[in-house]
Image 1 (tube, rainbow, N blue to C red):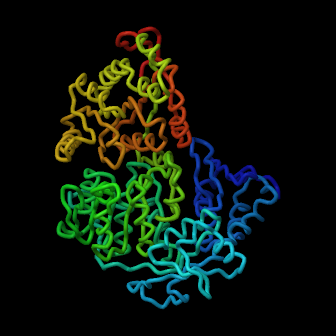
Image 2 (cartoon, rainbow, N blue to C red; image 1 turned 90 degrees about the vertical axis):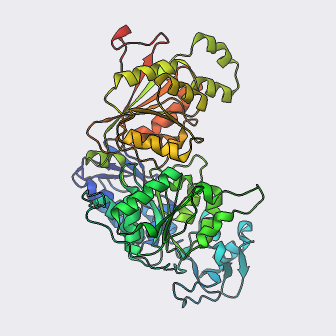
Length: 579
């Protein structure tokens, strides 16, 4: 095969794909490889995708063959494909379909979608595969051997799939979904608030990627889109296409109310059809929005979870997991039991600091849609953001205590560097036209900043009513600055926020960086600014490097500035670059 410099794709021997976004066929190539490759990095010029066993199994579940994958790569590749790459696709993809999960203890799949069997059958056409399954210690408690394969309790459906994929055997799950109780969910052309409402092309594409043609292997999965791009709209679109009772789980009461407001604003559902299930109100309706916190509450460490009953309160046909990367372990457990219900995960990033991404893929579903942040920025769907790291010296009085502290104490001393207060005061003074979020990890530090700035503070202890009052005042422009703890990392809609100052964080969490940056990405008339304050020559610099990597991989440029440990600097003094 000859070299074709006009083609957009470079296939490498480690199964990575490099996409030249400036090539003429780049958009077509991206759409063609998304079904079998996972986006890893998307900076300005070259996007990196990786072909993994999981991505190939996902492609096989959607009906693609190794020949389809090879043909796509050959069509878009700039250089000849390295030897051995395409042959390995056959070995990997052939594993999908060798193990099947079907309805009924004897392979009987005659049940209607609303008559789920009590037992499923796990079967394989290869005796060696069956022997490997039988020998797997982690599967013993879930499987009962019979003449056709293994009987699987309905409640163990998800757990078995998760254990098998860890062994390198993806399950072709052909057991049916329940339809759920019907519910007409029409989308409005004009929102209830009087604003025009139209679906964006990528939102429709995301919904199609999850629902597919409606056959086995579709109807569940994860959509990855940046904050501010309309993940809630994707959820409502899928609700309107499935037309069934829906349970929505999200991170906090404010997010519950935002979901409810959006549903009432953009669909034809009435207030009696949408309910809140939280610590404040425990109502159930055809569409119910609940918090993870109330679902995972229990009276004692060894007690049952009393609110798990919500999952069986109605005949749900769809469960939406908002901020799916944050799913707590108890919800994973109940999700493993709810494999007969269609599932949608929504998130800005699938990064989990505990490395449990495989649980999201196995129990909620594989990643069906992922759009580069910078692509949406370039089209004006999210705001352009400028990221800066400001390094500040430790005060002399803290240098010795820092030197002799334990690693955890070092991080806290660096995070709570009192000279950061002066930087926050100057930044807020220099950007008087911006609406600003000051975000941090440590409550004492945040309370002090709120006093210095004379602005409200929101923490986990702030009552929900007071929290929403502050958010409303900020949205109306009555407040220009608010100080927020990590409770603002998740699912908070503050569309006019144009600047964030991060004074401390969770040990360089990439997940947290994505969420905090997302708070200022809603489209607006002005560009957004994201400042991170870091203590110089401390462990904070190392953790900051991890966060910077996340920004660079998503195409964001960032500058590093050094501020001297003096009194509040003024723009232009000491020849330093001022933000």
